[in-house]
Image 1 (cartoon, helix red, strand yellow):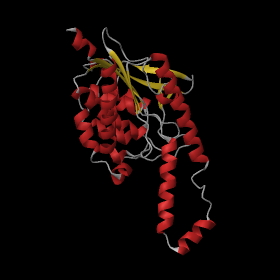
Image 2: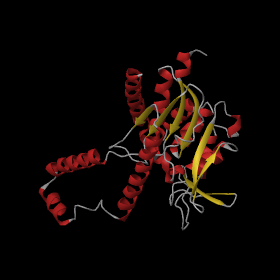
Image 3: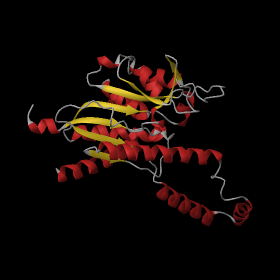
Image 4: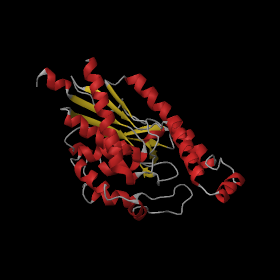
Amino acid sequence: MNEITKKKDVALALSSGGARGLAHIGAIEELEAQGYRISSIAGCSMGALIGGVYAAGKLKEFREWMKTIDRKRMLELTDFSFSINHIVKGTRIIEAIMEFVPDMDIEELPIPYCAVATDWKAGREVVFRKGSLFEAIRASISLPTFYEPVRRNGMILIDGGVINPIPLNRVKRQSGDILVGVDVSGHDYKAQSELHDELQERRKSRRSLAAQVIDKLIPDNLDFNYYTMLSRTSSLMIRQNSILMAKLMKPDILIDIQMNRYGGFDYDKSEKLVAIGRLKTSLAISKYEHNV
């Protein structure tokens, strides 16, 4: 292998971020389109799912399947549970993906792969480098209070993003590779707020006089509640952890994708999210290659 090829080998870390993690697909596709070879991969939450599907050689099939996901299909794949610690079992979605991505041992994958989860009881990170691929993925995506936690060997496993949202320190490194991180854990809250205010003003200008009177009688801060407070607080904490990890590990390329239009449950917007991933990755690669 010559020196140029070595510099094209990528140790890739994919962050958490819910549906925003579909941008990871675009990032991977753009890296490969520009001649980079992913030699190892580590993922957290949605990053663990996309990374695992890629490592299994089924990313193209997964992208095509995601195109079929609309709001109705999302509801069909949601196995609601009447439990005190979760809303959704999370079995149905995994079984649907396993119809075209067969489970296998992580050790059998063609490239080194690992997924990161969190042991809720011990308050520590758990890294899966062997055993069932889908058991590792299922543990890593266990969003607290939403998906049912995975119980394994006395542990209660929840989303890896709680502790390590972008596992740059867990991906297996090889001599001559470059460290690349794709971080979709952040929201562009300022742009999101400005967009929200703009849309509100447009709606008000188009509404009837009666509707405007009703608007005056209803508080304009209904979107500021216990749920949004906890959700944003959690997102800000995860974001800060990802920023600190990037400062610690200093990846050669950090593809930082903050979004203002898309949230963690916009799975029906897959192609738009893939396109954002490709665009941001192309810009990051251009900057990297210009500076090398």
